[in-house]
Image 1 (spheres, helix red, strand yellow):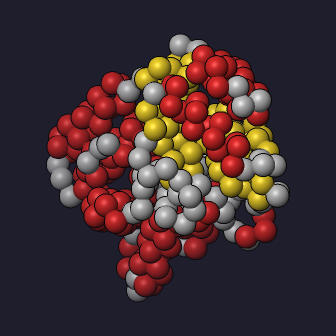
Image 2 (spheres, rainbow, N blue to C red):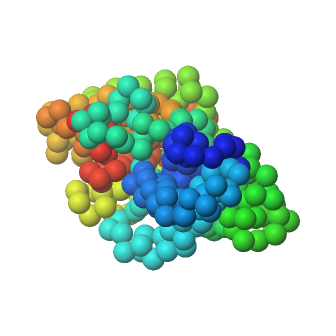
Length: 297
């Protein structure tokens, strides 16, 4: 697991990989950064002689990062219960959209692919901590079960069963539309939203669509999911009525077409969409300012 070799150079080269692993395991950039920092702190706390005995610092760091993430996931349910409203994973901008004003940001280390789409991350949230670790490490990053066993402190066969269980959850989830189809639907949603055209929005939304908003108690956001295409359309138009000057921009959100809402030049909301059969089936609207830091304001 990880890059073979010893010394500081080898451990620094692992940082990008570790950030990518930790974000997929936790769904939070800040928590991913903390997990990786903790792994590095433990590495540098080792006596030089012990470091020299470790053939692959990358493998050691990945194991420690995985265990730190497992501990975080184990306490996540209690923390999410205290969270105000729905909790959603942190939205990721494309490289060109990242705010360089905050200095080094873990988002700069992220590789955007199908394993970081909001739809995929939401499915990961439904897994047990052990399932998520086994599935992500094996199916996303291709680590062998013999090495995953060292992270979970279980047998390779047990890890294989955990990954298979996680795989079933992903397989049962709806397959998202092709990027070109999603981009077209999102573009039409933007136009209908700007025009405050409820009928057009209803036509673009699945009748059973669900919209979830995450304000974290820091900004106004509906605390419970809005269900039904007609209700969502009415809610979207009501938002536009209450926020004159709201600017909608088509942007990549976690690697797929989404929308960013700005007001007075500041990013207020980042919306991710799941599109199926030409209609929007899910909307995830992140409004918590702490989760919008990587976005250009």
